Amino acid sequence: MQTLIARLIPPIVALLILADTARSQHSTTDSITQRVISHLADDWVSAYNDEDTAALGSFYTEDAQYISPHVAGYILYGRKEIVDNFMKGARGGGHIDSIRVLSCTVTDQMASVVCRYHATNGGVEVNGRNVIVLRNVNGRWLYAIHASIIRD
Image (cartoon, rainbow, N blue to C red; front, side, top):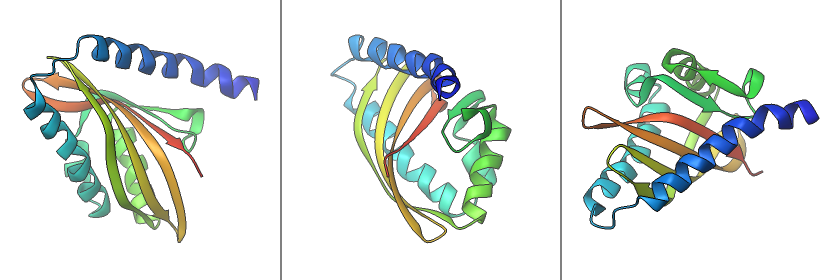
């Protein structure tokens, strides 16, 4: 158990620092950008549920990280590994039923998003949270860090 905690603490601390930095630099005049980022969640769900590898990959930076208790070592590195993992889940009966953005904090170059999701995985319903750190790359918001926290 201590090994698990030791492995998860650095990525979680990094997420909290990034989210706090984004919150402290938050621009209240950028509601259009916040709406654009909120729509990314719906588009991501469509790509996942449609098992669209190319579309799903287009959401992530090349060096993205995915943090989840459902992956070996609790973290995946790189777009290809992340997409392969999600496609394995989708093709194995995973389906995202709903996703709701709970908060979105935006700066010029980074954003943090917290979502609540409901999924059915092989007939089993699960609820959880996602913490996502987005990076603005040439005017396009891409997932740099994606963490899934399972609640049930």
